[in-house]
Length: 291
Length: 199
Image: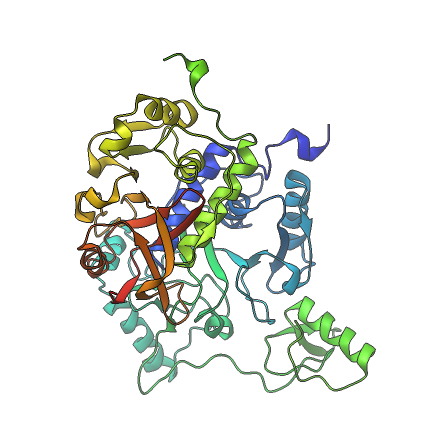
């Protein structure tokens, strides 16, 4: 018997999927609010995307095309193994091209190519509670969310400024969703925060160990927290990608030898590859984002 | 009634449920957008095939479903829902995760259903409201899922429904979420919808 035939479609049993689907519908109806769900044990350790995998398994259909990225990259361990997991248990099509994917699971970046309506972006979330390091008790953080009492978070950002002269949070940068809930956008670099605002794609967040699901419907206002005199600033790079030459994208530092040699390249491998393919095919300058 | 008389459910439960769920997710993510919900099941009237397929896809032994009087009067409907989902049927509206309404003109007020608690606003009822027509005109909505403004209306509904929708939004994050169904279509109005113009 083939792998796909020996498991239920997409690994999870139907009752689990229904439970997650109900949680997802409530998550979309209350943007930024963390819906508790009965997270299952998955055949991978916590921290490897058990939440994201359960969300993906519950939304995936036979005609979906899945892309999985790990920090922008399609070909690192986590991405490859999750992609294979769904190839084997669901028998669905997979891709590395952002524009071809209907469902994209990510840890933790948002692809450089703009997402479109109808696409679903699934985030793997380690710690869904943005207030957790400020208040360890779940009963208290629940109450703070209920009362919309977010003073703690502003004090934290203020202390950053007092100590460093600027807001030193560079990833998992807290956002306010549609003027109500403060949400942890997962440890996505703050460079990607502006892409969440009014994004045409549906964004779903799954935290397996912490047993929480939350969501951003398409076209939802997502504001990174800041102060009038210290406005939010996404990370900027003073150079372009060493391979494709793109600017204004998120870069990874790659050490090339043991004598301090290094290069900065696109974190989004699909974006980098398509830019390079375009440059060699057309031989013309690249200004537009490839779709 | 013998079990052999229960109308058939999904032909392919795994993929049919997934398709129905994705339509519902899409509807919830795009308030006011009307989508076709093709389904082959034939539940006992007056339960629509669309409403029945939502129950089959989402309800199970962990949920509680409330049926309005029109639906509750037909024993075959309770039998159908229980047989295919294993869900509990309740007469207490505030207990229900899902409520199905076949006679929307005389439906109870939205506040009669569970609207969650401030700590757990998700513990609220999703109403499946069967109507005759859905249209992309009439009321104007803004809110998450809507790029600028969405026009949407359903009929028939109680005359004070726009005021009820506004009150439902005013209680955010508490509130109920609405899925409207016709014989072939679905559309949703989650609690985030702000009604800006009642036509």
